Image 1: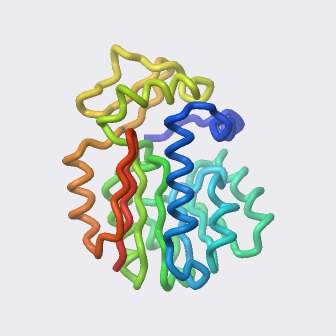
Image 2: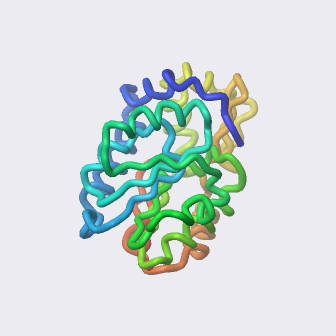
Image 3: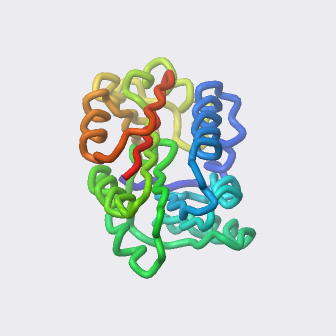
Length: 226
């Protein structure tokens, strides 16, 4: 699904005081910046990089960063931010064809990332995107996928979307499907929160050696090596 993002409103979500979103962001970034071994030897591939939220962090720890984005509004901000970092390259491309988009780049020892539930609001098919990420990560690399969980939608999700309603719109409690993890706002914004069986499917799908599964109140982070 695509979303008509208001980029400035999106950037403001970084400053939300919502405790659930703050915890998720902190755990995610702490893990990436502290748990990737020999990160200076590796190429980080940020799939669905948005406006470049994690680019400053990745630039410091990586040999090289490839930031992949398809949304035109996000790309403008992403390219603007990337100019500040010598080891960051921006690729305009569809994550469903990720391996083709990056065929001209050296992606040896990649760390392929898809963060903050970008797979819950994708341009295209989430599982196809994961398959493309795996293709790249199998080149002596690693894969990190970060998701919202269905179990957290009711207790955490509504609070999160209330706090960023300028971006997403207020929650529509009549249309939101808590059982299947499908959030809908009153402006039509949609986001999928992943059920346990869906996360298990992803785990089997990606294969590799399991490094870590981090399970928070409303989020799940998967890290595998190949």
